[in-house]
Length: 114
Length: 110
Image (cartoon, each protein chain N blue to C red):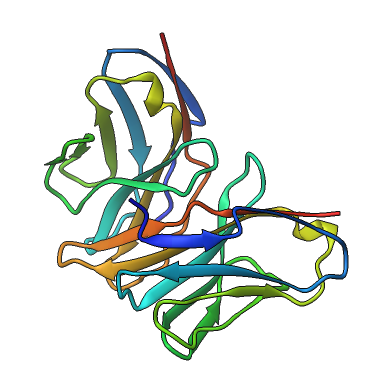
């Protein structure tokens, strides 16, 4: 049973459109993350947040932006989509559980920009 | 975080044990070893993690060498549904970012 939800699951959109990928979690985790993954390639961290009003850029530069106004919600926005943004975007959250950190991933949004 | 080295791919027969190696020769004393897997571009799934002792759960066993420079993930009875990319990751407990490498593509064959 998924405790982290991403919508939409698939999105095909035209160049120049503004899009927002939604990510919500019901576990009360402070820390949330966005990863980008091209088909058959590695996952790359593009954004993360350690709590409300906290956002940081990840290891891979991205033209997307994120916001964290509520603990449970961590949306990712592309102001003007381009074909180079075509990829899968995975959201995750984590909590420290004493013997390490537990991470939970969403099912992802597969974005195609035409 | 310490770098890890994994073989790019391996095959395993259904019903047999799958032993997945990972080298992390520069691991620090406070870095944990985590294993995740990703089935066909779904979100990565947690398998197991450990610091220095061997660990076992319902999915797998993790064997960490005494010098902690390498580890092995053991899937005791591989099934076709275990076909996935397996990631070995080392990180300190207070660094919450999780960085993925290329992983090992495991194919379980009937």
